[in-house]
Image 1 (tube, rainbow, N blue to C red):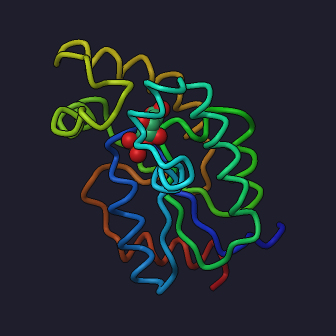
Image 2 (cartoon, rainbow, N blue to C red):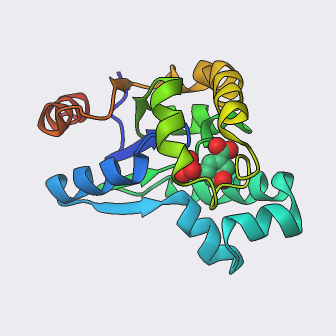
Length: 175
Ligand code: S3P
C-alpha cells in the first residue's frame, strides 16, 4: 500500500465533534490543526452564514473544494472538514488519496441533541424546529453516509477513547 502523508482528515455530520476531536489529536501528536470552515471564512472575509446568504451554497462548495486542495502536500496536520465536504466534487477521493480519513459516527438522536444547541451558525439547519431537524438529519445522513463510510477509520459515539484512536492513527500511518 502507498504510504499516506501525515495528514488526518476528520469527517462527519454537523455537530459530530470534528473540531474538538481534531484539536485534541493535534495536541497529542504535536501536529498543527486546521478547520476548513475557518479557512473559508478567512479566505472570503465572511462568515459561513454570510457566504450562504450572499453568494449561495454552490459558491461555498467551490471555495471549499478549492481550499481543500491546498492541503495536498501538508504534513503533520489534522484537518477538520465541514459536514458536506466529502460529498461534493471528488473531495472524498482526494482525501483518501492524500491522507488518512477518520469518520466520527454519531446516531441521528445524538446529532439532534447536539445540534439543537448550535443551529444558529449553521445555515442548512437554522430555520428547522425540533421535529424537522430530526427528519433533516435522517434524510441527509442517509445520503452522506455513503461518502463518510469510505473513511479509513470509523469511530462511533462521542465518548470514545482518544488514546486508543491515537494508537490506531499511528499504526495506520506507520509513525
Ligand atoms: C455544512 C457543514 C458546516 C459548514 C456549512 C455546511 C454541511 O460545517 O461547512 O455550514 O453541509 O453539512 P460543520 O460540519 O463543521 O458544521
